[in-house]
Length: 109
Image 1: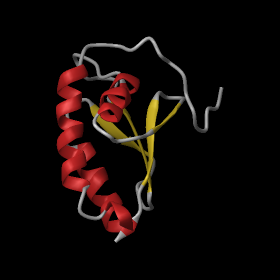
Image 2 (image 1 turned 135 degrees about the vertical axis):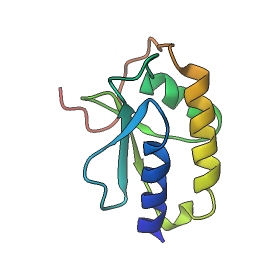
Image 3 (image 1 turned 135 degrees about the horizontal axis):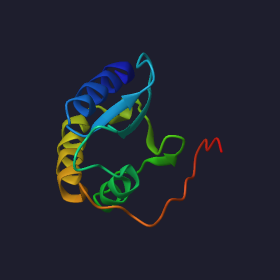
Image 4 (image 1 turned 45 degrees about the vertical axis):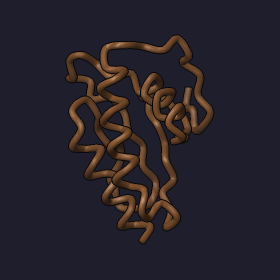
């Protein structure tokens, strides 16, 4: 169930214009970042803030600026709702940028 959930999340994230998934995508950890070719751009930290306002929490990390999720079997049943909120939030924040560039996980600077 955990790996199924992660695969569904990766596929859904990859289908959203302006986002891409980092890494090889075989396990339960997911990091998403902005597609650098997207226009207008997506600021993933602004995206994280918008998602948090809807009840979804991600760790913020860099480089590159990205949002990190640990997927588990307890995510079963909410993947579609998450992806719907993710699409809505991308549309809401696209072209904006948050001043808060802080990170809270695995920063490699």
